[in-house]
Image 1 (tube, helix red, strand yellow):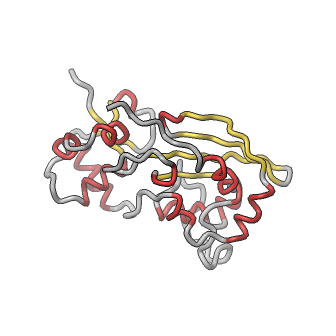
Image 2 (tube, rainbow, N blue to C red; image 1 turned 45 degrees about the vertical axis):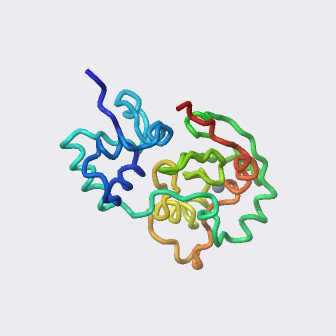
Length: 210
Ligand SMILES: [Zn+2]
């Protein structure tokens, strides 16, 4: 028996938005191979990663309902993420030392260790190809980001990343807008993530064999 296919969060959302395909199976079979490679997984793999849902009939209906209540934004690229970023974040990033500690370009995953003011933090990056795109350059990819620091958690980045679709892993804050710590909404990311971007924006995703 063929394994059940699982579909990514962004692909679920896209399926809901589009008006062309009536069923998920039609939608998936119309995907270009590279897109399909990124947004679908066999069950045995999908159950081990976050953000993938089964396509079977009952689960499909439940997931479609879920998607309706998710925030609309599910992806963002670097330009969108850093639009309006506080200049102080960029300035302070200069004092950070970055070390790549894990790298899995095939999965679009990188993890960094960042040292700053005697503390060490972990920065997570997940890059994926937007639906309908064949991009491999980081600037064109959908990015998910996260940092283990307190600034990320409480001073804006975790909130912005949650509502604007670029949070990697689960929210660490209470998802409330930090109106006191970030009144102008400029703290889109922390200095540690910005420091890492000086490296990761030069990375590419390996192109999938089609
Ligand atoms: Zn940080």
